[in-house]
Image (tube, rainbow, N blue to C red; front, side, top):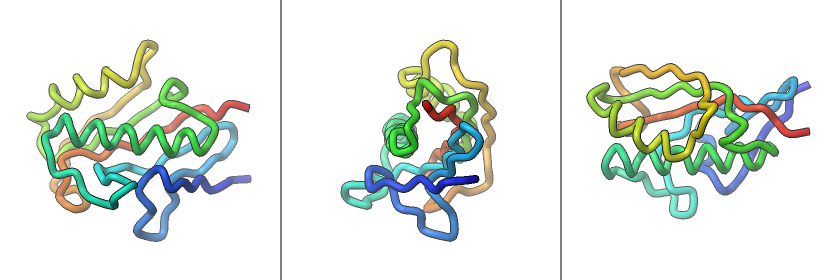
Length: 127
C-alpha cells in the first residue's frame, strides 16, 4: 500500500505528482524548490537562501508524513551550477547532522522556474 502525503506547509504540487508518498516504512519526497508556501512566492535569492527554503519545504513534507530531517537516509541535490556546491553544502550541513544521509549531487541544464537548487529525499517513517 502507498499513501499520499500532502501539507499546506510546503508548496503545492503543480502537476500530476505528490509532495510525498509513504510506502513500506519510507517516505519518498518529491523534489522541492525554493517557493515560500505561505506566499507562494519564489525565492530568487542567493544559493544559500534558496537552499534554506528548499530544506524547510522538505522538512514540512517529512513532518506531514510522520518523519523528520533526522530520519532522512538519502537525498538527491540538483544544482543549476556546480560551482554553487560549496555554498549549498555549507547550508545543507546546518540541517543534516551525523550520521548524514547518503547523497548524490548533479549539475543539470535547467531546473523548474530557473531556480538554483532542487532537493528530493527518502526518509524512514516513525511507526
